[in-house]
Length: 229
Image (tube, rainbow, N blue to C red; front, top):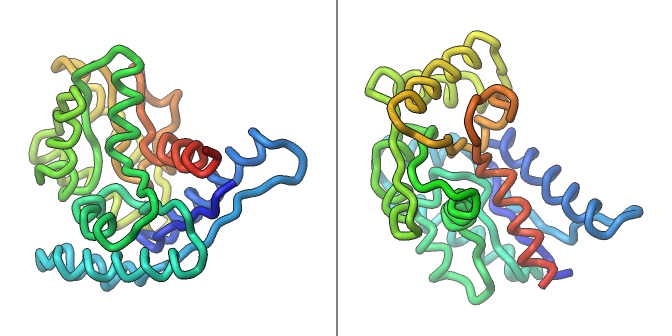
C-alpha cells in the first residue's frame, strides 16, 4: 500500500472524519489490525478562512501547495485534500507535486453517474454553492447541480461555519437541512451531494428521502483505492 498524504485542518473536525474513514476502509479490505500508511499536514483554518473571505485564493493555493510538497517530502505517494471548498485551488496543488492527487469532485461525480443520475442538489459552503469551480467540474463529467435559493444557501453556510466546524450538531439544524433538501427534490433534483465534509456530521443516509452522495465518504474510499493500486 502506498503512503497517503492528507492535507487537513479545514476544519480539524472534518480531518478527523477523513482519518477515521481512510483507516476503516483499509481495515475492512485487509482485515486484522491493518491501518493506513499515512501522513497528515494540518493548517490553521482561521488563516484559510480569512483568505477565503478576502478572495485571496491564489495565496491559499500557495499555502496548500506548500503542505502538499511537505507531505511528498515526508514520503507521501498519493495526495488528497480533506475539504470540498478548497478544491477551488486544487490545480495549485496538482502543479506542485509529481504524485497522484485524488480529486473529490471527480470521485463524487463518478458515483452519481454510476447510480444512473444526472441532476442533483448541491449543499456546501457558499463558496462551493455559488462559485463555478465545483459545478463546472461536475458538468464536465455529465452531472448537473442545483443549489438552494439565497435564503437556503445562507442557512447552510451559517450552520457549517457557526456550528459544524465547531463540533456543534443540532437537531434543529438537521431539520432545516432536511427542509432545504426536500424543496430541491420537489423541484426536480434526483439526489443530493453533501458537498462539505462537515455536513456528514449532521446528515445521515436515513435523513434524506432520495439518494445522497456523501463526498467525504466517497473521497476516502477513492483515496484508499488509489493507494492500493
